[in-house]
Length: 100
Image (cartoon, rainbow, N blue to C red; front, top):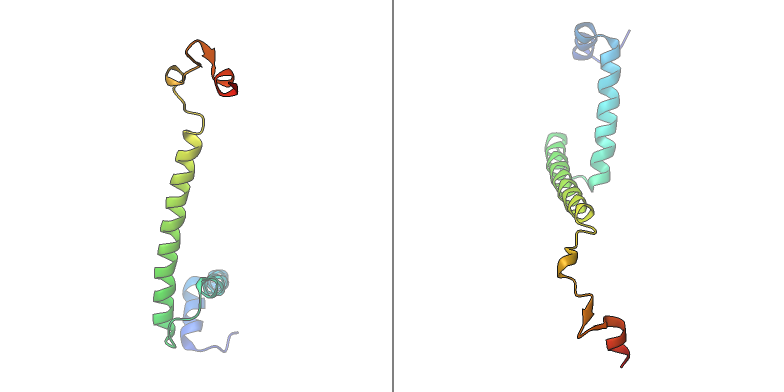
C-alpha cells in the first residue's frame, strides 16, 4: 500500500487514509505559509516550525489590532456633535467672513 515506513502505515491504519491525505495537505500549506513569513530560521525543522508559529502569532495580533482600529474609525466616521459646530460668526456665515 504505502512504502513510507512503519509509522506511516500505523497512522493510515489508525486514522484512515482520508485523514492522512488531509494531514499531508495541512503540512504542505503550513510549509508554504512558513515560507511566506520569511526565510527559514534554522536548519532544524522543529526549531524552524516553532519560529514560524511565533511569527504567525505576531501576524495575527497585528491583524487583530488593525481590524479593531479600522472598526473604530468606521464606527466614528461621521460622529460629530452638531450642537458644538458654529454655523456663523458674528451674525455672518463662515464663508462670508473669510471673503472679507
